[in-house]
Image 1 (tube, one colour):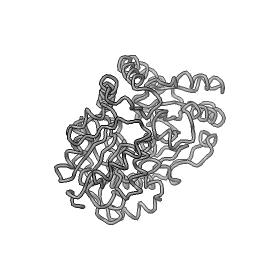
Image 2: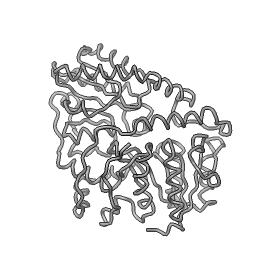
Image 3: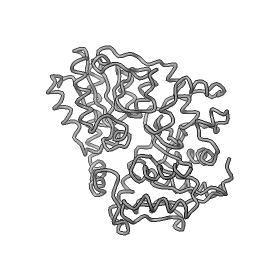
Image 4: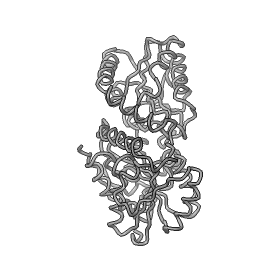
Length: 428
């Protein structure tokens, strides 16, 4: 482990809520120096140490120069951020790498819901996993003796996620006067995002009823079905690592393939992302496309909810690059992926044309996937969550030492010195 006293961590934007603030406090107690750059009042609200908070209030175009100057002024050795593709983070990663600064990237768990992702250098399509083979992972696992933990069936703290998202946007909407130059990394304004949060909360009972009815119809229908796992169109993984410009383009591709290739008695179920907020009317688009291809009575839409029950009876699944696909593979179901994803390995992701996939999908190599999943759980997947208090406590117990270690999680396993792991599920 590097001497913490020689380390200076610069935090940029993190997950909504107090996790980055608590992580900074833990690293400070270990002896390191921590600073936080905030781009709006939501960032400021969750960083507890005012003396180490640096507000960025200038125009976005000056950010690269300001960031480069900060690295030298503060003697930064480590950069910490959540996601590596939003413009301010992509610029920061590029500059930090050019100076030999360690880049720590957090993301939602590749294996959700009871794990989060911690990597160095990049995540998702920029992850070191993209260049790794399953055979190489098996070799690295040769000395590991841990048992494979069971797969979770649901996201344990969605209500906390929604709460902190709404609270963050409230700070930005009502108290952002000092950050007049702030521009969100998504297309909608903060006001529009906030209204969508309120609408989602207000309509939650109606959405729940709609979801229950739609799910009941599918489960009682008695027909074979395939699942299409939808993603948030504004999600960075969809935008940066997908062949589609819009979610509608994906919907059109899937329905065309289903109409052409699937047996006439099979059905297609579109499962919305749990955080889908209605900025795009997916149901209307799906209905129009299904009618145009003559399969309106065989195509269904389910608004959010739990995935496990639907997967238990599904024939196959298709997605752009959703992390929910890990649950598909864990169950040994055939999977078709269109975008770049850390799990898109030829051993367990179908290479068939879409029409052939819907006609007779090829099952994944279950043994290869178990090796892959075990590798993730020994390296970059850390038990805990960003949003619930028990989840943060469990996460902080492990990740602080991993960040202070000389090697990243993947190299540590290769060298035979992985971090101690705890696989207990989070209790919310």
